[in-house]
Length: 254
Length: 326
Image (cartoon, rainbow over all chains, first blue to last red):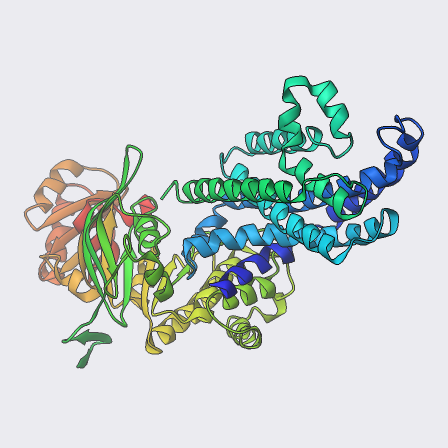
């Protein structure tokens, strides 16, 4: 079973490198996020809230990089559905579970590989994680990449209408991206978002960012275990829901 | 035990490869296939002959477990497509009517990945893909993107997937559509080799020549119903009057009256300026038919007596011409 899942995943990973210009654009954007936001905001923000904006935003960019790259798989899954390439996948000698997990893992691999460069950057800019912190970072990256890959795949199969599909994915993408603590500290989120603040604080991207900030030593007072558990719950829920939605939509015509 | 007779292999003790039992498939209110019952035997080349939209592809995709039956069931070597779909997929290889790939896919990479999925190791995959690409004259296209391939090359790419897999049951949906004539002949030989090496082959086609040339038995499917199944010669024999007189006429004269008179000879079909009369002892009746037309003031341009074609067979069973329906 594991080898079938890895073979399925390898296809999505290989395709990822075919989008060279998209990848280059993403790398430039994520690096620019760190450099531009870091340099500009460092002297603009309240230093009692954020003493060093570069160190603050870099772990957030780790979440963002992982999210963008894992989420990219949905675009192809949507195209496959419209062009009925999914019929080919359904005819292959693999079980439906292997197919679904293979796609999720494929998206997760994209995220993990893409993020690895930014992990090195974070080590240089923020600090060296301890071995225990590396385990937390690895756990966070694996779970977040799987959850975002699954979510993206499920959303891309909700409709065959290209415009609607792109709109749904964009709305969810920006909701997750902006309603998170990637660019703003939790205290500010609580002040500005009012009743929505808990949704922001407990979104998977915010939880992951908090764990990365702890892992790289930017934050000290973090309930790591609770955050890890919460991220685990998010991942399990999203993967189960995504599996059901993906399979249902994949086999809907049949 | 096999008997070879006039190029058609007949089998006495036959293993059933595919058993279709009361299979019906609906998409919303549209019934694509209605109450299909059929047996396809091990190591035979079976053809589904019918026009576009007749239910061929729906049946094939259900055998391959891409679709599920609305009612009824299909068994592939004893495994139910509804209850043991994974077991069925292990036995089936499918070449789609419309090749399935994304523009970013390259020929060799696509096939090597396919080989890996169907169970080859990385090293074996490279070897078998090279062999198949060379067999299908695709080696020079190996580094091309899918979008750079012509329609015929894309069809060969689909067939390549099945040749890599060498499945117990090979399903080929219009495998030679968009392919030039010399390549068609080559692909037909490859399909026969596939059977000779142990695969059962099901072909969907609306090409009568392909059905005659390649298939041992043919099922005529029309508007979601299977109207006849037999060997090609068996189907022809089932036309009660074994000869077809084909007359091309010029001018109308008393055409209706003439056709009425011709009906005394046999069943008459009339299209444009061509008349077809299904008769026994065609040579004798042809002269008579020509006299009837002449006496009605209709000039006969040509007259020919021939054996019925599969198109005649299709016409006989469905009341429609395959060429026109396709």
